[in-house]
Figure 1: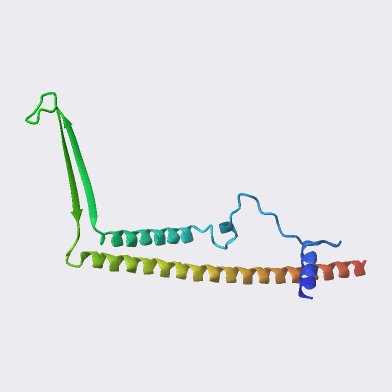
Figure 2: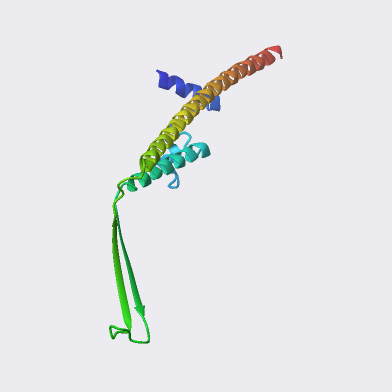
Length: 168
């Protein structure tokens, strides 16, 4: 019943007198799944998402500071004169293994800061999502009110036309 009533109301709003069928629109290939999501094209939402990605990358960076390092450096030098080894070239290779043992809590404080930044960014996104939801609800209410005003105006027009045709 509700579908039939909605179909009839749509026909009245559009001024269609003959029977018509509702079909789903065909999406263009350029439209992605994100474009179907309300607010996906908003710059403020994209900025918060970028900030969240940056905070996650910062947290990963801090975690990697706890890992040991293995570094290899090499040097190959060639000279036109032979040296003590009776060769024209000299090669050096140095391998370094570094294990951070104590840094007075610097890494832990950086980790706490990164976690706090990530939590802040996520709460900003939640607040922005609530704001977008409020905007959508407000817009729907305004649309419903506009439809009601349009319906009243159409009824008034019909009454005016009827009164004008009765007055002739």
